[in-house]
Length: 267
Length: 267
DNA sequence: GACATTTGTCTTTTATTTCAGACAAATTGA
DNA sequence: TCAATTTGTCTGAAATAAAAGACAAATGTC
Image (cartoon, rainbow over all chains, first blue to last red; front, side, top):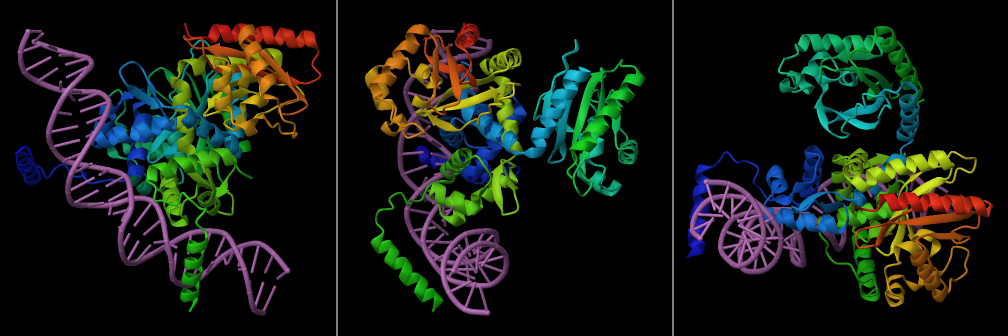
């Protein structure tokens, strides 16, 4: 009886509710990847029920997968309410990457030096999909301890680095690459696409980029490209400094940054 | 003809080679986890064929899984021979863990300070399964740049930290926990179990541990426990210093280490 | 230059895993 | 206090993904 009722309901929803598209069986690996990426976006310990909703997976499946990942220490229970977040194994995998990657190691040393000498927060940035991301950073020792969330995806037009990271694309490619909603800034203003394209062209021409008042009104963002052999800025080096920093200082920092980034370029 | 030959050979091997036990279908998630753990053990870019052999998975399956993980940037192709290793996403997940874990953050600061003040390589260690592992480290700035591989599993009896990490267990529990082969040192000597048990008891009593000539003949290993609320040494803080360091200095360092570890204990 | 491995790709099949759903227990809110 | 959610666990069933194997091309070895 219960079964008949259930089936009727299913039939009904299947007929009426076409909108919910992606409700197909997915394989475990894909669920795992969605789950890890969702957790990275969430950027804090999250309950399993929430995760299931966010990745559009059945609860039963999500519980199953989380249990397996917790067993492998890739995830870890934390907090009293049954939240989970990344675990120790995730850290070890990440360190293995960082230790083995030559560019990453050299960048780490350079950031260390820059942060301690200039007291400015120093970042190593790149693209993840069509979004800008801070890959690694060293916080400046100054009073304004500007810190950044590593791994959080941010629209490219909000940042100086974003302009450099797109400077190998034609205007058409850029229009196609950056979703329209990414030109809307956090404060509600909308950045004109033309103005952004001009910024990118200038960034390409001068090999550096500075912006202010985009992601937030209190900081200057200075960036220089680390180009690969093909000349594409796969990653950037970046200073985040208070908006009231005087111009000579900004120029000095940007010159320094560009010089270091140049040295980091492959070959 | 080629086909017939191949099949005959297969049939033969299937008949003769019963020993290979675990050749059952496994699910994708388990394969992924084995693969990541194998890569961590390998600790260098590895070819897909090798990986398949190491985790006992069919080649076709391994290729499939690797392709999916590369797409998610959890793995990354590197080297000219088709090797793969951890990717950028693995780093981001790991950083998310490190940034969110309060103990980890505090330990990072302490290690930073200790390494720069004492010029000794400073490590944060714990257990992974029944093996000792370096979870994080800061290299001392001295001439003897002693560096360590993070995430590599090492038998507990080879290290000072290993003695502290087991000091909540009874002798019987320790015998059951540490595999017999782990008492064989890298130089071929075998450590007497009794002597190890005595070391553990002393470590528990004094709240610190020092060893030399175990994992290698050139270093001293000084360790202090970071205990949880139940008094169990879940992790340790550790200095690795040259074996010729004079005793007063060793005592001074160990005292310092024990004091810092005490401060790091929860609550 | 011939031979033996290894690599990367593809297809077919069947043993398995994902999913839907139901349920009791624990939370939350009025 | 009683609903209304939410949590965590289990089940059976059907869709599907893992495995086996075949093959061509690349690589390595004598």
